Picture 1: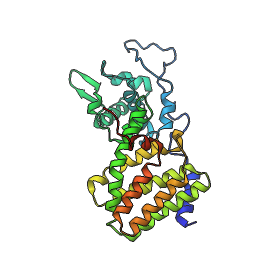
Picture 2: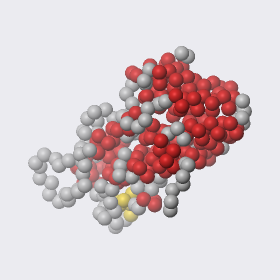
Picture 3: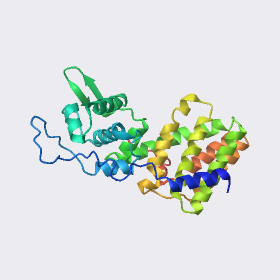
Picture 4: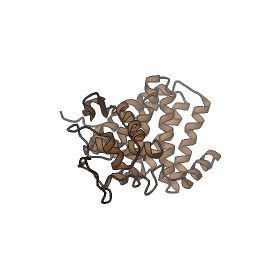
Amino acid sequence: MSTLAHTMMTAARSADSGLASPGELDRYPYAEAPAVDRVGIPAWDGGDPELGRVGRRAAGSRGRGLHGQLVQQLGQMIVSGDLGAERPLVPEEIGQRFEVSRTVVRESLRVLEAKGLVSARPNVGTRVRPVSDWNLLDPDIIEWRAFGPQRDDQRRELSELRWTIEPLAARLAAGHGREDVQQRLADMVEIMGHAMAQGDALTFSRADSEFHSLLIQVAGNRMLEHLSGIVSAALQVSGSPVTGCDRPNEASLGHHGRICDALAAGDGTAAEAAMRQLLTVHPEVERVVPAPREH
């Protein structure tokens, strides 16, 4: 095993999966406070005690601390439909419900506004925006949709998007014969092989994600490069052991190896074909690609 493979696998075992630790989200639960008078604060319907656990099953919050946790909670509630446009989001109410400061609430709402989930207007307040305004390519929103009521649509849409992006990226990457990149991709395949042999699905998924992101980044197309985060999010919600989806297999590993071989040979056609074969290994893509949906 290479030094890189050993280091990556050791790090994966010693670290957790990047999820919020037990009780981390539950420190700020959406639940009724103890018997304390809260005159003037309206009831916030639609609270779900499962939201904290959903947050851990997804990627946890990308930002740590109160701010990141609140973004995660509110984002999931909006995407799941628990918070709608029928009433404004009152910062004071949010602060008391989640036991955070007004500064934390204000910054969290700004993040959600940047994602297109909410809008703030004078004399109207902060309200949830329609789905058509959401930044559906935002990795956080991808994850929130993938663990909410829209999970089936989200995973299908991601599969379709990957089918469009990644074969093209593989073909373009074959024209960029950098030895350091070739070695890094080969290292990721080696890591995946060792991880699969040891039943280490977490390390496999991390190496898989890096493989696909790196491939897109070396395609020589800056617009494609900006989509690498989408592919990473897609792998996380559709192939990660956290979601309980299918485990790594020999067919997937073999297709990764064939992509590497084609890139090393500068054969864009073979690289593209191998990537298409790889994507059809995944059950969710098999449902999508061969037979287009009826409209």
